[in-house]
Image 1 (tube, helix red, strand yellow):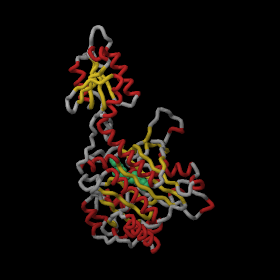
Image 2 (cartoon, helix red, strand yellow):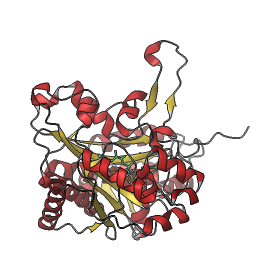
Image 3 (cartoon, helix red, strand yellow):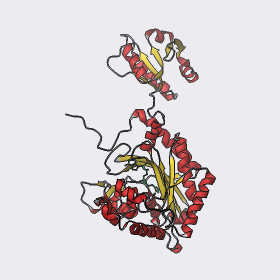
Image 4 (cartoon, helix red, strand yellow):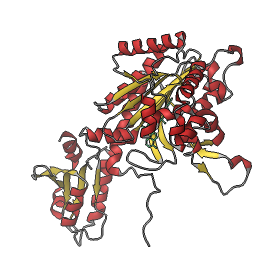
Length: 436
Ligand code: HAM
C-alpha cells in the first residue's frame, strides 16, 4: 500500500526546520512586548457567518476559498463552521464578546498560528499557512500615529527576522463614504471599456470593482494603467489623515512608496492600507499586509451604544511566515537548522556488566543536570553503530562507558571536533561538560 501524504497545499514543518520557526515566533513575542501587545489565541474554526460578515461575501477568500467544517454530527450547533482564513475577524469577535470597548482603552493584541484557505497551491501559496499578526482596537484608535506605529511594528519584526530587501507600499481608501465614492468613480471611468475585457473581469466589475485593480489579466491591466487614480477619492479630512500617517512614518524612519492602486482583497478596510512586498518570490510576493478597519466592530454587532455614532477605530496587519522563510532563504539565510546535542553515551556490551543500564543511568543524571544527551536504543549495539548514531545526532562529545571505565570510576570523553579522548572522573563529568 502506498504511504499517505499531507493533503494538497499543506506541509509538515520538519524537525530540521522547527528551530527556525520557533526563532521567528520568539523574535515576534519580544518585539510585540516592546509595543505593549498581548497574545490572543482564538479557535481555528468559527461560525462561517463571521467571515462572511467581515471579509465580505463577494471577496475571493469567502466566495471561493473558505474551507468549511463538515461534521458527522447533524445538530444545528455544528452546522455552518469554517476554518479561519485569517485572524482579524476572530479578534474583533473576541473584542465584542469580552466587552473590551468598555474595559480596555486600546486593546493591543497579537496572534501567531495557522490559517486556512482553499486556494490553488503554488510556490508561496498554501491551503494551510501561518501568520504572525497584530490588531489594535478602541475608541482611542483613530490616531494616524497608531497607523504609523502598526506599520513600524511590522517593519521592526521583519528587521528582527533578518530580512533586508523588502518594499513597503501604502495607500488610503479614505472613510467609508470616500471608499464608496472611489468605487463609483472607478465604475464610471471603466464603463465604456469593460465590454472589451474578459468575462471574469466583467463579473468583477459588477461584483466588486476594486478587485479589478489587483487583476492579473494583461488587458485589464492595460485599461487600468490609463487611469489617473491618485488621491482624488479622498475627502479633505481623509487626505489630511493620510498625510499625517505618511509624516509619522517619516518620524519612525520607515521607508515606503505610495501606491494609488493598492486596495487590498478584503472588504473591511477603510483609510490606510499597506503591503510588504518581496521581489523575487514570483506571483506570491506579498510577505505581509494590513490596514485600518474602522466600523468592523459595529458591523459585527459590538461597540458601546452610548458612543454612537462614533466608531471603534481599528488597525492591524499579518505577516505570512512561509513567504518570509522563502525570502530569508533567497537572501542566503539558512532555514535548515543543524541537529545538535551536547553528549551521546556509548557503552561496551560485556557479559558481566549490565552496561546499557549504566549508560541509561548516566544519561538520566546528565539530563536532570540540564545537559542535552542521548544514547543508542537499537539491538545491534556494536560500538561502531553507536558512534554512527552519535554523529547523526550531531553530538559534541561522546561519553564512553567500558569495563575499564567502570572499574576506574571514570568516563572516556571523546571530543567529536578534535577527535581527542580524555578520561574524566565520573563525579566531575557534569562540570567538565559545562566548562567545555
Ligand atoms: P492577507 O493579505 O489576506 O491579510 O494575508 C496576509 C499575509 O498572509 C499575506 O501577505 C501573505 O504573506 C500571507 N498569506 C495569505 N494567504 C496565503 C496563502 N494562501 N499561502 C501562504 N501565505 C499566505 C490578512 O489576512 C489580514 N487579516 C491582515 C490584517 C490584519 N488586516 C488588518 N489586520
